[in-house]
Amino acid sequence: MTSPIVSILMGSKSDLDVMQPAREVLKELGVAHEVRVLSAHRTPEALFEYVAAAPARGVEVFIAGAGGAAHLPGVVAAKTTLPVLGVPIPSGHLLGLDALLAIVQMPKGVPVATFAVGKAGAGNAALFAIAILAGRSPELARKLVSWREAKAEELLSESIIE
Ligand code: RP5
Image (cartoon, rainbow, N blue to C red):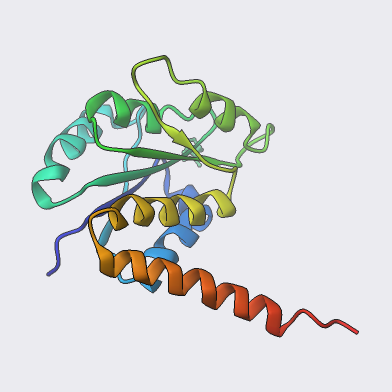
């Protein structure tokens, strides 16, 4: 089995649908990853253990999606100096604005890169993770360029509506 380079975390199984585009992008570009549901509030000890052990298995970037109080990305960032990419999940009455503000307002010294609320943010977090890894992998850099070109071609092929 290939070692995971990217870890996708989410605070609840109910976040899985919104985080799906991150999995799809990583699959499409052939980046080994693993996906875990671990909560900063409900399972903090298990989360700490996971974050501590992940680099030894090959993890170089964390993508963390959470809704509501959305402490997961920040708590992961508190426990590692690897890049942490936060995805605000739209949930509950505030539709993700709560999670966006929680994730984006990290205190100085413990950064989390914050992405758009919802599925666009999840997909972009995966692309950004690959962009980080592409710095040392020409193969990944090439794949990223091809992916972008393929998307542009797809759009252009459907550009004439009438
Ligand atoms: C957060 O609370 C999770 O990330 C999720 O978005 C939200 C609601 O969780 P559930 O009550 O659906 O498990 O911790």
